Image 1 (cartoon, rainbow, N blue to C red):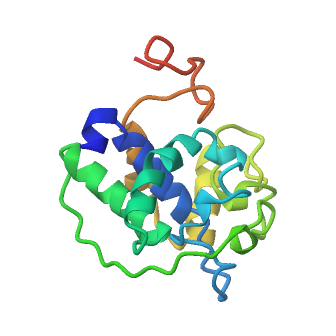
Image 2: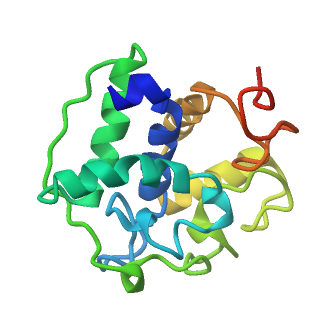
Image 3: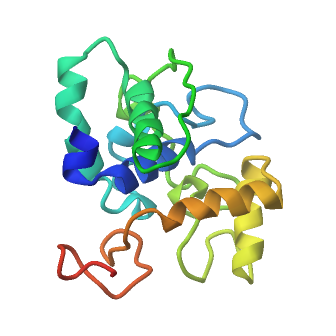
Length: 187
């Protein structure tokens, strides 16, 4: 009901991706390596520039987190995303539950903790200059998703397709001139 009534499919998918997007295959230790660990619901991750607007997703999930306290934030965030995709007409995503959720803000990935990236824990920058020093958007995406996460070009393109779900807001991604609210969102 929540997802359909509040039209929060897009923000839940983005919330889950940005929680996962801190993953760095080059780091062996947990929770330093990041990933789908629920850390995004704490500052400093929630307030990183790349995560602008995601406090709304957290606030939408908080009543569920309180009601179902035996479900950790790591699983709750990913479950909300998978269900959002299904309710938007996408495939049913089989989930395996039991992710370890970080215990507090001290376990969050730090914005400048990723080798080769200046900010946002290596999440992609919307515009140049890119924090990884890339000269082109394609080079930047490869730095983020190939070096840090191990994706190939086909996987990067598939992931980028998630940006077609929903609308864009200036205050969130910065990719459009429109602001909050129905009248100000992209059409």
